[in-house]
Length: 118
Image (cartoon, rainbow, N blue to C red; front, top):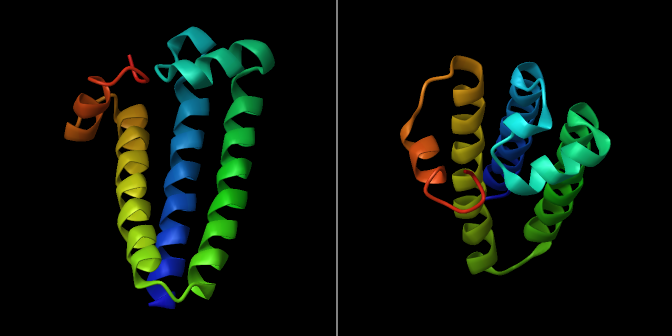
């Protein structure tokens, strides 16, 4: 089980890295960012600093929760981490794919229906 938890954590971190790198590559202005929360931060401190702060924050949070989950004896917490972590990874890989190719995918279509990704 610990192997799967660590693998999930690695997938979250790698998928966020791909998301960050593809975002930095395509954005020329914060106004191009579709995530309204990230856009506000980008307008204050810039695109690259925002992306790297987000990625570092994710690495810290994922590391903490991975450690906490491994120490947990709760199967609910362990399976919850695996399920939620893999869903997050899928979404992040989908966003990175869209950023890199410019082609919509089913995840991007779903995200566009939410308030945060207009």
